[in-house]
Image (tube, rainbow, N blue to C red):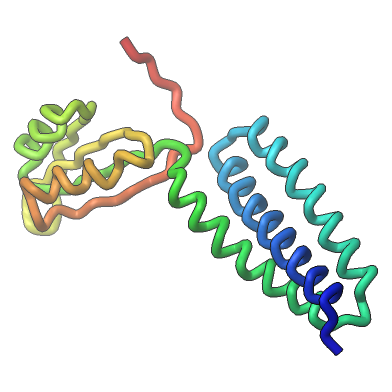
Length: 169
């Protein structure tokens, strides 16, 4: 039935699979953001771990606990990878703020050190300003909070940036 060796193999497979799928999720984020070398490095580690996990499952194919651990590790790795990617917040975003109080919101953001570009537009209810703010992902929530302090009803959109060509002075 259940042996100590079978249980330890299942635990190793579970953790190996959780690691390789978690790395796969992070690798996808690196690919989307155009970070080739990082994606390459992560893919190499991911493949090594995957080969190890699969070899353990194949060598213990008669033990359903190992196969179950493989599947559970896959599901857990997806969760872990998404959580880690959200924690590290790798990359940059454009925060777009739609508000009739563009001047005030822009001043607040600029006072906090953010670079803001303002466009005038016409919305359903009249004049509206569109503010573009390019920031690191970990700063996007701060931009939104500052904008909401000035206009609690502003509409905010977050866009991931794959690449940008900027000149900074």
